[in-house]
Image (cartoon, rainbow, N blue to C red; front, side, top):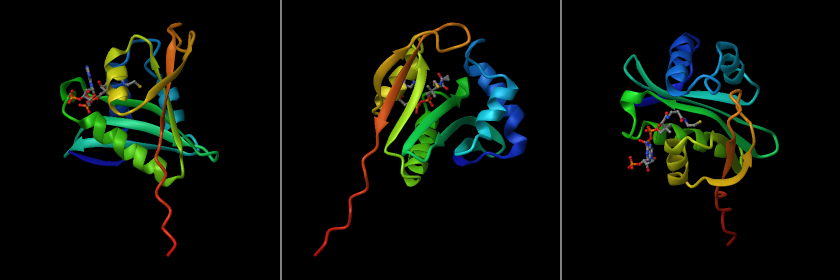
Length: 155
Ligand SMILES: CC(C)(COP(=O)(O)OP(=O)(O)OC[C@H]1O[C@@H](n2cnc3c(N)ncnc32)[C@H](O)[C@@H]1OP(=O)(O)O)[C@@H](O)C(=O)NCCC(=O)NCCS
């Protein structure tokens, strides 16, 4: 498996994958996904094996030191083999390099797989957001506080 940046020709496959990964009301329309991918400060990483896309992550950073995971989607056939972890770690590294100190995300209250995944990656729940999704489902906001790189010691 390898990870690379998004290319315009990936779009249709990523959108199809998002439809497979999330139920109606949570999955993105083409316009929503396109808007997030191209938002200022956003980047999209794609996990692939030769031409087959296994998953992707969309994340963004702002100028105040906050990062945000917009979505992470792994193909159902590829789950529990580390693809999501590799994508999340690569995005966290990129957000850390952009001086983010905290990474935020939202996930549906009933998405137990995602909650287990994020807890494994040291995200903590900070609050519930009522009726966050179009289908009125509540979300949980989670955060991971990134460790700062150690300043070089003065001699
Ligand atoms: C959540 C998701 C991204 C995880 O991707 P993945 O490639 O399967 O995750 P990994 O294989 O890297 O899993 C790492 C760890 O997370 C936890 N985890 C992942 N999926 C889990 C599940 N279904 N049940 C319990 N724990 C799970 C486990 O601790 C796992 O380690 P282990 O396999 O050694 O036990 C994937 O299930 C997915 O795309 N789901 C649909 C979309 C979604 O819900 N996205 C997140 C909300 S934005």
